[in-house]
Image 1 (cartoon, helix red, strand yellow):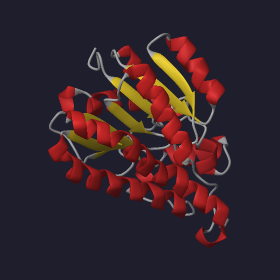
Image 2: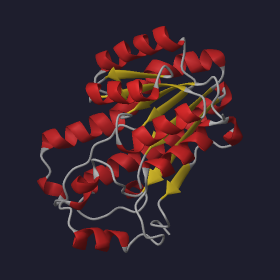
Image 3: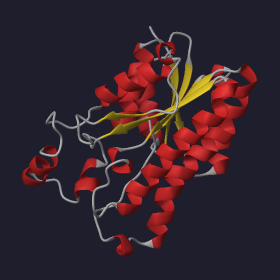
Length: 248
């Protein structure tokens, strides 16, 4: 029960890596707000996990939606000890000059601006209590970019740099900030990254991962639990690869 008594917010928590993190946190004793654009999905997972989970429908790119979520979480939990910025979107593989401008704006609103909005919402209280852990879910794409996913890669590179900058600024206030870099996994984004989900494309993708499999929600839950627990009290500003060796 490494997170006993902790109160957490996990954005994009209704499915994929986010759901894996939510399940791990609850299993380790935390109360978790499952924040997702898919409100029914968040509510269903919360109902499955019982009284330690709360499902909230939120658009993480909307300041008003984030502020409403903050109020709901504070009312329910009294405060937040752990913030996981997991919500993210990608785009289909394509030449960098071909991506539609509106899609570009949405990618950076969800993958980057949301980190600013959640920090603005929760960091002041963490500073006041001089404790907190923030975890940003970035990507191997931010370290070892793949062609034709340029703007997604760039958004995740931004998140890695933001993690390091946040860690330096917030360390004196007792707040740790880290990131995870998963390789692609069995999540709703997999087919987006590959463009087409066929056995041949999967085999080619898996050939680039030395361990020979995708990241799983369980992998992410285990790594997130460690980095957000007191066991990692001396770790901040790290972007940990959970990628089976993809970035070696």
